[in-house]
Length: 488
Image (spheres, rainbow, N blue to C red):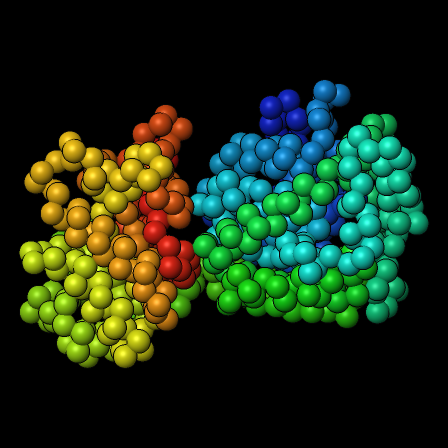
């Protein structure tokens, strides 16, 4: 059986010398592994051996942990750790990956995910909490301390003792004999290095900031619905099993597995966990083909979306006026039956677009289709809060009727009480330009145009179509208007 060659490297990120381990084929799907407290990338050594023959594994050490070297001026907070992680991802040129978040890896990784959602192909959560019901009384007491409060720094010092470090591994374990002592011994070595106690104290007193971001992370999960695998030691003294089950509330398709072990579930249950991760990564790279009907496939955007869906292996049914009247509920129900999703990229006279939106909302439940991607216009986006482009007096007259129809369709979708999981996709208001797929774009649920680093709101038709098919494949942004921008 071949064993992977594991690289041990450093990369500079704004003066922080970040240590990381990497293994696996460079062309394989990437799993970025984020460690917990008080450990470092060494906690994933067994997972490297199990998965790196088939997947690319990359595991950095945060500032204040492991072998990473931070300057004395570094100010430790979870925001700061996530900013270094983002710089690390960019330095390595990682454009898309599955994210493994354990313990501290949750608050570090979720900060990155909410800032850069285009990076996240899937999510493996292992005892990384994002819900209040997942916090035990012990956890609530521990995170209550804050910087500047009298006695707070002294109160968190027991967290850095060998007794607590060892307890992170053995607490709740069904068979402690299965847990190697190397992990907690090495963790304590790093905790006892000069300057590390101060770094960990600052992070412990900043942990409360994560609780305030739980609603932000939950919204990201609801909107983007990343494929999610939750792995949880049910005897974790800090993070309760309710925190694992809660992920299903925001990602209904999340796969949740509870193990009879403690916080460091991977230490005792790696033989059970590694195959679950491997299967999850394989499904990420080979998603089930969808049956997609495209109304308006002969048009520019409808055609681009149809071609992109076919390129990814989905079964596409292009539909035009000869196949069904887009405003005829009965005709739509008949022709759309048997599909997994519908794309509507329409325009036409007599207010066809809003009439079609209403007909689709009525027809899709009868056809047994729950997913609708409605390609709308950019005119309904806002150039200032509450001020839409379409309502501006200088809006181009030749596009006004179409823009108003597309806006009316959005209003109708938003007002509907419907089981249909619709997504309304607006291109940038001006710069939707001909061009191929680059794969570098950002998508968000917002009523304002997105801009790139230079303040431009621009995307190619190829990237727009790619983002549309992303939303179909992931089931992301249900009942939301989204827009996109190219990233160059």
